[in-house]
Image (cartoon, rainbow, N blue to C red; front, top):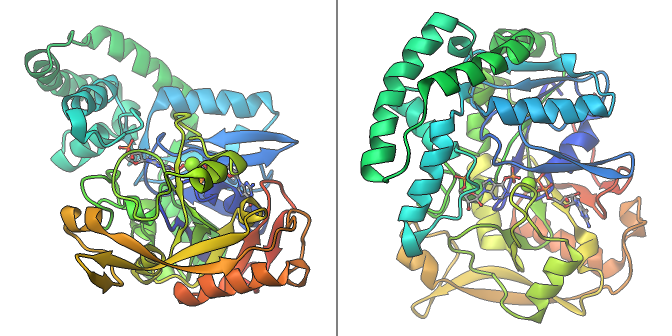
Length: 429
Ligand code: GDP
Ligand code: IMO
Ligand code: MG
């Protein structure tokens, strides 16, 4: 393998961090290509869970170089805090590289994220309040500040002064909040620039070179394809393109260089924040999934909404990403269920459909059509091989594989290292 994209195939929190950590021992580089501190990727390390937000989840592997690509929006304060946590674990952080083209999340993005969300009233998106939407707005509006600007004192001050004037007008005149101080932000961010300077470079040239030499690159997605700004249930989406098609752009690589896309699915569904989720359960089964799966957000601590596996959404995503393989996570969470349901169609106004409508009202009307499978009611947590899984578990996994039309490569039966079953060979070195 030279370049493999790992993408979230549902609404985020599928277990991308665990899979990246699992595969990183075969990689030279791990690259985050979109999103920002809204991500929370947990990896079990030394018996403890480490939550990555901006740093790629390959960082716990000593030989691996980790890159925050141009497509990411970086909150420098949060990044420095994360690096300090890693340093406290004796992790060598000199292996972290930050694209000089990555945009910087500024204090006014945080304020705007909050006041804009508050102003939505009943239509709240349930954003993570990490400034992500407003930072991407500025990128597209061409008033963003990039890492390269942050490192250049004159450019930084000039850009900050002109943007802050506009932002303070919005903050005070539209939202009635206190203005932010140019001097305070400037001093704080110049300090961050000093801390991060050694990590900032032209990462796309570095990655292009590595890919051309046949080195192994893992491109780590954040969020999930059903939160994609184009393909999620708009406007209940995040502000970046989360799909494999954006992995090359967000890393600064040619689209032709991405040879393999792996989709990471949970064996059931979860969603945090508002927006349609056709298979959401409001009953004891939903509660059980939340408890057994510890389904509480990594970044915000919010309880995740839980439901059965949605194969309509699953196939929509596999086609959209051109998935070459899938990983099915958290199989162990289903271990005690007597029966397990899978959604194979949506009933809308008396008609069964097998695709994701674009119209939000229609999505909201989708009633899941289920097929039901017998559970296995045995612990899978110690299984290390496909043949060690109970027959009903294998049947269930094979059905998911069939419904998402993509070969199953990995099955995860617990959060720890060593709890991943390799079902098929991957193009790894
Ligand atoms: P990500 O955002 O896609 O990286 O996923 P998160 O880290 O936000 O959420 C996944 C959670 O499930 C983490 O706490 C993982 O440690 C945990 N996890 C991952 N794989 C498994 C698994 O197979 N079984 C169980 N029980 N937990 C898992
Ligand atoms: P990882 O990478 C799950 C959700 C938020 C909200 C919507 C928009 O850990 O899978 P934003 O702050 O991005 O503007 O919020 O997207 N969201 C996530 N949900 N996992 C994530 O990341 C998420 N990142 C954002 O809850 O509904
Ligand atoms: Mg997460």
